[in-house]
Picture 1 (cartoon, rainbow over the protein chains, first blue to last red):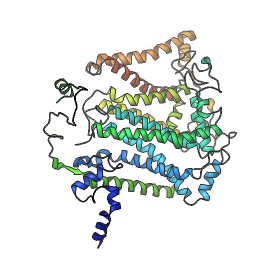
Picture 2: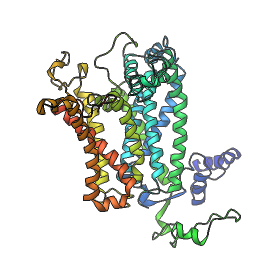
Picture 3: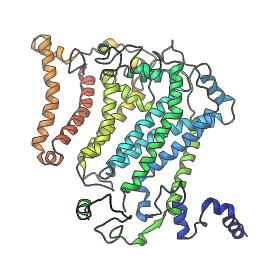
Amino acid sequence: MLQKIKNEIVESQIFKSVFRHGYPDNDLDRAYAIFSSVFLHIHPVKVRRSALRMRYTFCLGGITLFLFIILAVTGIWLMFYYTPYTGLAYRNIKDLQFVIFGGNLMRDLHRFAAHGMVLFVWLHMTRVFLTGAYKAPREFNWVVGVVLLVNTLVLSWTGYLLPWDQLAYWAVTVGAKMASYTPLIGQNGPWGPQLGFLPTNDIMFMLLGGTVVGQNALIRFYVLHCVVLPLVVTVFLAVHFWRIRKDGFSGPL
Amino acid sequence: MDEKVTREIFPRDSRKSYGLVELMKKTAPIVKKEPEDTVYVWPNLLMIEIICAILVTVGLMVLIQFEHAPLRSLADPSTTPNPMRAPWYFLGLQELLVYFDPWYAGVVLPGMIIVGLMLFPYLDVNPKGVGYYTYSERKFAVFNYSFGFAIWWITIIIGTYLRGLDWQWYWPWSNHLEHMNPALVTLVPLHLIFVNWFHVSEGVGKLFGDIIFIGYFALGTIIPMIVWKPMYKAMGLWRYLTFSFFFLSMMGVALKIVLRLLFNIKYVLVTPWINI
């Protein structure tokens, strides 16, 4: 009976128009299932049995990607309820906490997936280091990985400001103050004032859109956090995965 | 066949057309392994990925039953919390502000960490140890990574648990509500110590500091060049100099932490523009 229903579905015109291959219970369709899917074709069709060994990768890179996907989904959900305006941002978060159905769930997931992503990027990097996977011909992919690490940290930091509470405000103030000490282009940095950089035109001013963390900083961090940085991460992720396929997997093959 | 040899025998030519054929010196795409040793990604690998994803989801779901995303009172520019903490992953850098001026701890050093990490594959010339965990075949590389890693995490732990009001050192059993007396610790630049010890002028004292600073980098670069000649030969001059700069800078961070915590040294290098 079940078999019959399955056959009906698998052989229907709709299924065939979507998947272009039969149910993957034979080798040909298993191969098609991978390389005719835009989502799955980052995988090879076949891998060495030994490459599946968990004690080599511990799935750390995969977990990092999965956390990024969780962050994208919960992040977009949160965007429906959030206004990047200093007069409303904090109240929006309070609403998420006490009024909106599932608000706490989404906010907590977003927060802890973000912590997790920072942690797992780091663990993944350590794994890659300890197995020498960054060595030729994979040097460049390591560089891409470092770019992704930096982006993860900046994403996390820009997101920190958005709740507009004391924690957010002062953590970002500490960080932005650092920018003002940048040599040559910061108001407090070595050779900064000599080169004419003042609180109103230096690198910190550019970052915050003002001399203090305020409305302009909030909208800047919001756009960076929700649009610019996720896009940058996505592009580098694509390169990262592409290079794994092109340069070859480092593990026991 | 070596890429180079292949290119000599079959030079690339834009007037020719090519198929997707690659020359290998091996007898099969994957050498010495039977094709039977491979398995299909569907379902073998995909199943592992799905299980991983489910475990992560369950882990997160369990975690958020016990811990919630924090939300303090509304942002208030007129009330500065004490201590004022960066997010945990930046606490290491914030902690380094105790040991260095902000332009170095907050800007130059993070930049150097990023660039240094990116350069690692280009500086590590040891071809061994790809594709498996090994310490014995690449002790020095693992030491370097672990050392940087240790500084990063130890400073995070100090910043999270051992710093309290005014970013002073508080033990877990200290009274976290009472301000420490900052006058108990007087920080001095190194050159003033020379002035006191040897009764030299401040300018000469600073010169000593400069000599120690430059000498640290110069000797730290030259001595290994002579003592570990094979390593130097394998790396070549520019690769070695780059590596040496980053390595000594990393060690310098650790040295400065020790100098500051044990001997209350504020600066080693003192110039009109920058102090380190």
